[in-house]
Image (cartoon, rainbow, N blue to C red):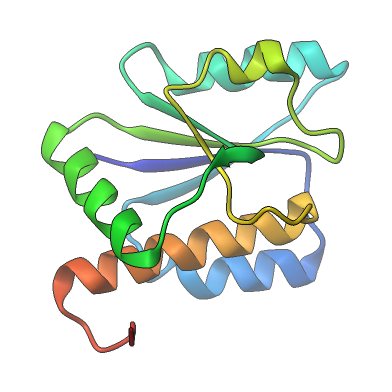
Length: 142
């Protein structure tokens, strides 16, 4: 099972550094940048990159929030199912309702509006935290 983080465009160097801090700690995490314009074309490419068997998790402020512990349980369940999980992060315009209707899950990191580049780092950190919780590692402190 892989976590595939699908994003639009190239990130700033500080984002790449932040993502790099966590992606090396989550060996089954793959970052894929989706090129292209206009937005509709990129969304279709993003969904095609996921494949039909993968769970599609869209990051959007309208989605479901998780505690670190509940996300860890969700990640463990996904791992037991064995399918890849595609985490889709939009660009600065976000996703439309039509886009979100394609999701198996819409996940919100916060009710705040967050910059899409910062979201990349936060998702990687939360996946590492979930992995640490499931492994009984001391990284997470309740």
